[in-house]
Length: 245
Image (cartoon, rainbow, N blue to C red; front, side, top):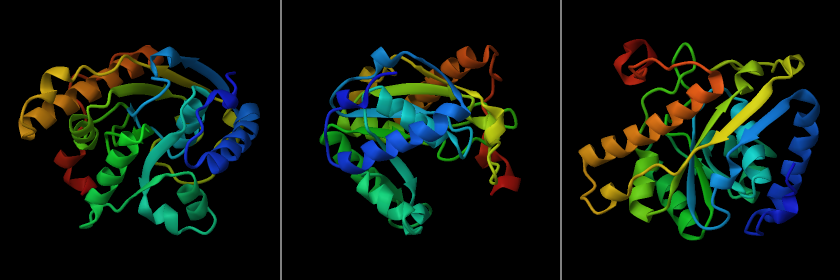
């Protein structure tokens, strides 16, 4: 396993480093690891890491992976978590970014993420916006936040496909994790999503849809490789399912 002392020091280091070490102590006996493609993750500079979202447990697996790959992760996290005693303090100390969903302040998260990218941070975005509603946990239709950040900052978008954390907590399940499952937490980093041809165009709805579809397409290919299966041709669209609204 790579050493954490190769990670560049940056704001939040004093909080993130011990958290990652503790997380490693917890996860090491409870899971196996299959990590690939870390050389595709830029060692320095602003980067938007996009990942598929399959479980309430997968942010821990993804955060650990990115830390040991050499980048401190800055997640866009639900603002409600920042109000939880102790947890909120740790999140703030580690430089995580609160998202106030469905409020007039929702855009503040993108502004904060943009500032972090300008400062050379690694910002993690789940482009689906939530844990997938797809019954088989395939990546569903994406939202435009990652595309907006990429086109506004010029930072590369690096996809990370993941699989295995759903064995701890399946999909949108909330409850006691299946610690006895000891899954293999698979992470696969892909090449940066090609967006250069879109960067000089006016950012309108069509451009955002195109960029978002490229991001979701790149993620889906990685997840197919990890699962050894083919994803459905049509991505699940939660906005088209009235039972989810």
